[in-house]
Amino acid sequence: MRNILITLLILPLLALSQSPCDSDVCVVQFNAGWNSTNDVEWLENLKDCEIQYIDIATDTESQAEYEIVVVPTIVVFNGKEIKRFQADISFAMKATEDDVQEVVDEIIMDQF
Image (cartoon, rainbow, N blue to C red; front, side, top):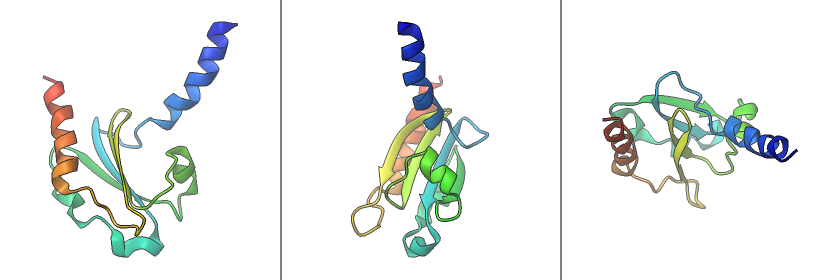
């Protein structure tokens, strides 16, 4: 009984943290079309990772699955969620390109 209860509690958490990408290291920007003025412009500059954009206004399933409550939100995945960066109250991202690249670099270095 205890194992069943643990499984029922853990499985939903595992489903939420799975990467939407094909590659191991992936950075996803979750935003909404109405907030496009706050798109993270430097995302394309990141190295050694796949980059994806998900519009939660049109993809409400992803919004629910990844529990996105603030836009933009940047999530770094390595098969599962590793790190999340969220915008401030003005819907502007305060994390920098260096902040996100550092997480990607740590993932790459840990693989050696």
